[in-house]
Structure formats: C-alpha cells, structure tokens
Length: 307
Image 1 (cartoon, helix red, strand yellow):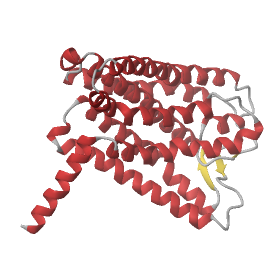
Image 2 (tube, one colour; image 1 turned 45 degrees about the horizontal axis):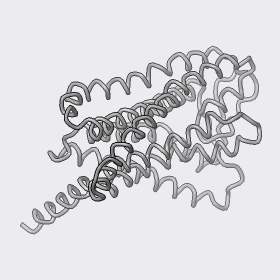
Image 3 (cartoon, one colour; image 1 turned 90 degrees about the vertical axis):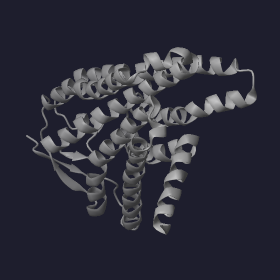
Image 4 (cartoon, one colour; image 1 turned 45 degrees about the vertical axis):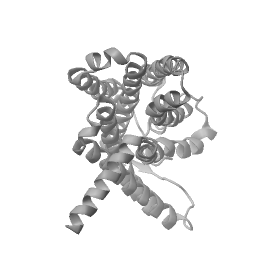
C-alpha cells in the first residue's frame, strides 16, 4: 500500500530552475501582499463599507488561503525538482484546495447576485442586501464549499493505491490522484462531475443569467456616461469570472487523455497562481472607489510623515 507520493513537478528544467523558482516566489509574495492590502483597505475605510466590498474581502481571503495551501509545497518541489508527500498530507492538500476553490466559485456567484440587485433593483437593494443577508451569503459560500468536498474526499480515501506512487503534477489534484489508484475510479469520477456541475457549472449559469439582466438594464439607461458608470461597477467582477471559470472548465470538464497531462499541469497554473495574482490588480485598477481610497491613504501617510 502506498504511504507517500512523489510529486515530480516540471521535469528537465535544470537550466530554468532558478528563474522559475524566483518567478513563482515573487508571484506568491505579491499575491499575499496584494490580497492582504485589499482586505486591510476595505476593513479600514468607511467608504468601502458596502456588501460588494464585503464579498470582495471574503474573496481576497479565499485567494490567500488557496495560494498558501498550494504554493509553499510547489516551491519546494520546484527547487528540489521533486518531493515526497505523505498519503494523508496529499489528501489533505486536495481537500483544502478543492474546498477553497469551490468557495471561490460560490463567492463569485454571490457577488454577481449583489451586482444584479444593485443595478436591476436599486430601490430595494438596501432592504434585501442588508448586513444579515450578506453575512449569511458569505457563510453559506464557505460552508457549502467545505462540506461538499467531504464526500468526495472520503471516496478517494476508500480507493486502493498500490505500487506506482509518482504524481506527474505540481500539487495533489484529483486527476493525478485517481490515475494512481489500482481500483475502479468510475464512481469517484461521476461524483466529481456532479460536484463540478453543482458548484461550478450551475453557479456559472446563474452568473450568466444575472449579467444578461444587468446588460439589458444598462442598455435602457439613456445617457452614455450613465451606461459607462454603471458598467464600471461590475466590469472587474466579470473579468475575474471569465478567468477563473474558464480555467476550471478547460481542466475539469475536458475529456481525460494521456497526452493532456502536461497541458493540465500548465493550465492548472492559471487558477492556482494566475487568478489570485491578477484579482487584486483587476479590482484595484478598475474600481474608482478603491483607487480613491488608495490615494487618500497614501496622501494621509505622507502628511503624517511630514508632521
């Protein structure tokens, strides 16, 4: 019985190992700093005390958790060109990573619903999206993500792993783990597809429906300036949705083939390091209120230093 797995990472990269390691380390540190700044700025600024920024704060914290679950061990594997991980450690990494990934899908869906209410039903927005409702939606997103992955994780633990224990990946993901099982994995694959549909595809459909209603409402606005101002409040979220869900659907809903292992390894970097890195940049530079708060904070610090 297999008690530990060997993660090989990228093979034959001796000449680029230092560059890739430094690049990934820089991305990891930048991701942590960027998302932490978003959380700190939203928490400290009274101007950003709204449901939209409350959900954004939850999203940034989710990004920090997801990146921290994957990146430190990934850096270790890159540096040593491979590494060992215990069976239970690998399963724990998969569970925590998949749970935070599902939570991010649900948070993005809740944010789309928030934008739908704000744009399509502005008169009732403050009544519907009150403090109690936003807290419940955030809690529901976190609990649903972590509870839903328990059954799939238990099903994986019930499989037999004998002999071959090399995972050709950068972290413990579902497909590489199932590839090593010596028993039939069809039931686990069906269960994973059902979870993907319920926690990824169905939320994505809800987001699309919300944005169709949003676009119809925006087109009814008489002035061009009004249309642009209204669209700017949801453009950053729409960009984040396209990046994250696009990468997930390409990896987890595409037919599994032997020659797609290397492609999946590269594409998995899109949502493991790409989205957590780009989200703070997207929400900062495409949001006027956040830019204004950043300028106010910087000028306030400069004024205190001069005093």
